[in-house]
Length: 399
Image 1 (cartoon, rainbow, N blue to C red):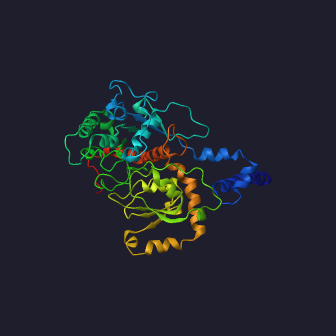
Image 2 (image 1 turned 60 degrees about the vertical axis):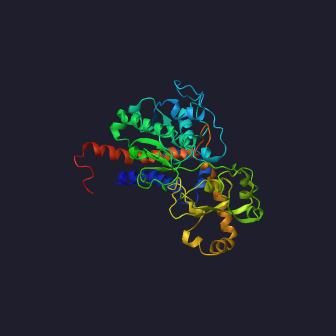
Image 3 (image 1 turned 135 degrees about the vertical axis):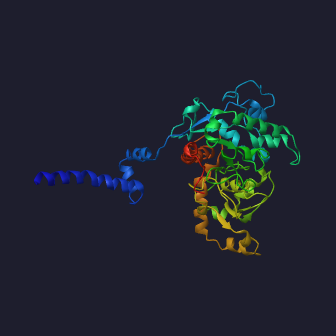
């Protein structure tokens, strides 16, 4: 009996501290930071618990006319695209920059350098397609549209021919046939990108800016909403003594796509307006975020990047289209917005703005890594769909 009691006491002496530490690390008890200051090695415990392997990506080896050749017309057509010869980005304004997500995603897979200290890469390129989780199609569909299409009524353009050529390449691929394209990742960030043939590849994971013009073939369950590249320079030197009083303008809005001169005005404004236009989203939102200007979003059908990780209500204000049309209503609400609440939103903007930075080499939790993490989270559903499709005699019988 005494031995049994002794064993019980020993077990409790081990389990109770473990449970206590687990509660601390999960944030249930408020002493997490104090404990970690005394036992810094416990930081490794949280890292081990949350770390997950990067998504393994096989990138199609397409001729340069689909990507690098669009950036540099002199790029040799028969030369493989590598990190060494990948053209540097040189467009700092206009639609080419806003929708250049495809360029940065390809660059992240070409990157051959070692990880920086603390860098977590969310995607790694693999040379063996059989080991891949997903397949990346490096066709710069948005850039092709901007280079070759000057009138949306044009037909038989070079862009349209490239689209058809890509469709034929994919249909001939054993890897496409194996999954019906479900595990393929195709950037379509410009609302009109891949316009003539995107319905032919709509089983794939699309990288989109929103669903405004592709609602019939795209959906949140399978696709990834990616941010626009911001047009104004990031605000890295802001004085945090009294940001509320130093921003003299209540609400700022600028409608042009070329907004380099708007940076200073955004930095002097408390709120920046982001209304829906011909599409639910625009670059204005991301200009506001990197300017630490609290976004005022008026768009009833907008979908936002990384929303499973970011709560936009913590740093943005939302009005419905109906509310915005009421004379004076929106401005009145902003004028009486509490200073302490604004400062809290401003502080959160500073904390999250790095998630909207596109750069090379990629950095931990930057925009490209965030996009790849979103792709990684689609993989289980892709695998489920692929595996079911292989054995079902009657597809989706439950419908």
